[in-house]
Length: 455
Image 1 (cartoon, helix red, strand yellow):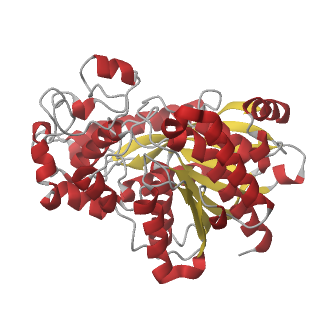
Image 2: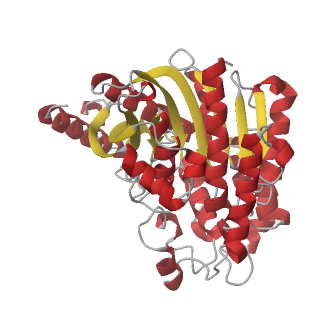
């Protein structure tokens, strides 16, 4: 893209965003750039086969990832999308492109559209593979094996113009994912020797599991003339938001990390729907209410937020209620009839009927995103309408649920060994560190099977 074109688009985007705040002259503003308009796109780095293999060997992940077949070029795309109120906003994505002379690294390549897990870090960037562990895993697991990876950073993160993140807003996060995919494909079609093929796979972990399932649903519902989902593999996602909320906010127990997730969620739904509370003090205890809506995303360390009294002083991040807890007990008492519960219901994905095959993966002992209320419930619900398309529901704790043969035995044994090696930290590391690589290799294997057999 030329410098003049780049500056013109930035100016247009700035004018459009500034014009959204109202005023007598709004009718004279230029229309906002179309969704997926590229503001800037650039090469952000590269990794050779040798570098990738050295990294996976050092981390011990190579037994799962395999050796790299391709070098990987890392690209960064800043694009236009829309916020939950339909207003223009910018968001960005990391794009990992296989390169090299091997057959797997050239020509038209399958695309993985990937949704990342929850983070509170404002500067989070899936194009920064040297610092971003999730991006590094995707590079070695997918891009180095011949997949083009498109990984949006989401509204509210990196250089996004939105001041908050529409956390677990199924409709809006799917729109952001679609626009990231559109922008990445347009960029690569114009400026890369490796092109995206029509094969589109969707996956994501944790929050990203919910986003991946929602994106699969909404692409098939609204964008079928533009994209065809080849297969999907959501992992450890909170698909059953209302059932999960009924446990966490109602009967208990509270999931690990809740005091980080709930502020993201309440702010998201308040900004999206405008009716969760009339002021934060209705939901939050008095010491937290004044600053909570602007707390996340942030680059301030969580330890500093706790030390500054912005979050409960609880290393398990489960202190939602009671003295020193995050939320008012009155908010909990009114939960069943609340607009918050209605918002959770609106973003629950049970009831989706896919047109293309999928698998799901997680770990039954997950203390963060409860497996049975989410993965088991979603799988059972899908099977009432599309049983033939649910190609697997992988529980890393149950060998019989995993693919037959060496693959399932290897993954099961490796996961149990990883838990044992973590020792006393196994529960605290379970969701964020232990499960992701094992589920990712199972989902990749399913995608490779789909490519090979044309399921």
